[in-house]
Length: 177
Image (cartoon, rainbow, N blue to C red):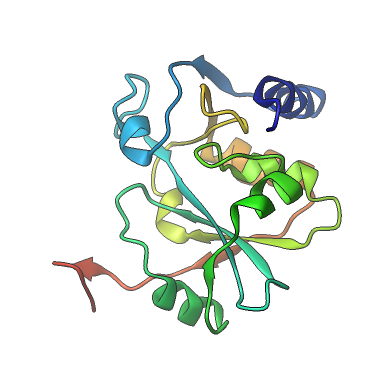
């Protein structure tokens, strides 16, 4: 089992050493996106993302997908948007091995541990529609909030990654349009 406090300390050290501004909130463990949405510091100005680690059938390509909290997740829709066939949830061991994460603590900040850049960060473009964006610092007993500009212009370059923005079809009544 990962030492989440140590992992959190490493993430915060990266942010501090890069001069990245953020707000840090400690709280009870949040295991689901519903738990996150109930936090008093999450309001209409903050997008707290649903984060999902995916892989192809051969487990040779990995994708960390960031979604708006209420976006229904459909592997077929994301597979089609990425042009990759048969995406599925990555095995839980991949979270710990590749990102130093456990289920419930998934975060793009874990990409700091993906030194070989084997995981592609993908995001639903709608996550950028608020003033701020929030993630767990690889520990679901805390949340960091960044301005959108700080996250995309400073955090992403500090992680050395090149994310892919996706337009996902609008969902109404559970049907893809």
